[in-house]
Image: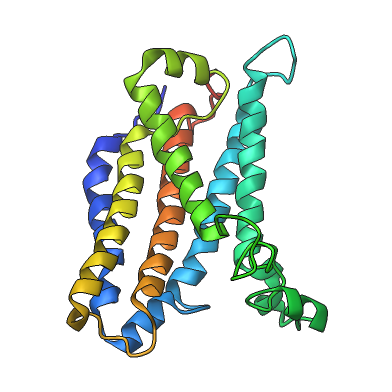
Length: 248
């Protein structure tokens, strides 16, 4: 028996949750710091979201009945499950600087000289971040592009355009399009909030943290949250939790 999940009934709840995550932006300094500073609420939750997403795609890879054979094009989809499991796992370890703070590992002088945050991670290397970065987009912007493409653009295109869906659905995981609109809403909301706060600075109470930082940290937290939710519902709809295998 196939387990039923009603995505539409959950959209309203997660839309309210999305809005609620931005409320600390309007609160006093201590509250905003508690949510968006390093090693605080949003920073601690983000790697959990990424890890859960990684586990969900790993489960999809393990439970898929498709054999890895070049004769079957569906093998690309199973490999993509493995690819996204590894990608989200990598992002998880990058978020926690590969356990540096957890294990109290000191950053050596060489890393301090080439890492913007002076931590053991790749995404904050000066090659990628800071004024001397060689890439036109930093990793936060790349994460936003990935979230919008994987979570919104691809699912929406497949929902609206049948030939695209027919081409991709046997080769690539297509996340639920309903949550894609929440990912788009997150992008629009953070843009609107920054514009609003710059026009009406009296609503922003933090004396030292710039407006963009608090909003961007919340935005990145929300991308992780929504991608995790999308992955959970995708796997839940494709797998029978009572034991049946992955659909083709």
